[in-house]
Image 1 (cartoon, rainbow, N blue to C red):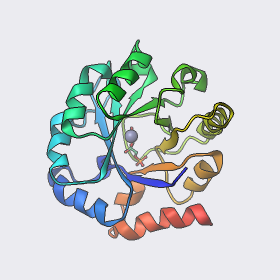
Image 2: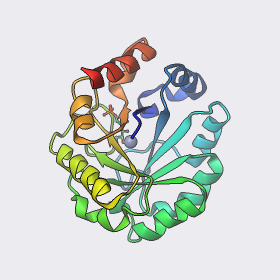
Image 3: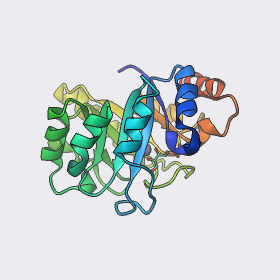
Length: 219
Ligand code: DX5
Ligand code: ZN
């Protein structure tokens, strides 16, 4: 699977989304990761579909939307209309994960499924045939800047093994605490999409910092 870097706009300057999107575009990153938080599924609140629709006017990047929202099926149409390319939803957030993923695909988006650090891979297995992307959280969701949880790597390996066994085709994404020191272990476990927020945006030269992640994969 091809490597994709997904800078997380959660770590950017929210008063300047247009220029931040331009800066991300200039790094050559494949995706921009957009975290949607409702203050219910996670304690934090970020922004919703209307903000994503405004961002869409300023960027042609792939919008990788990660919904940390209760009953995300309520927002499928709104995100499709906003111009989201990938909509990734938590198994823990809905009673109807299968139906919600079907709805995302029917709306013309790529469908992603995500599990928290405390949720086993078994919770994903019934929907792995449906999805375009599996996201394994490597921190508890809600905030940027947290420490990477290494135990999540076993789950990355497991979803990679299931993909090989069954002939599925999903990307495997990791999110949380990804930096130049943790990215390689994620890659070796089988991940190919790397979300990074605080590590990338703490640098003044975003393009050079993205390159350090790519270089770390080859070390
Ligand atoms: C956390 C979010 C992440 C966050 C990662 O709930 O899902 O996407 O932006 O931030 P870092 O890379 O700082 O851990
Ligand atoms: Zn995220």
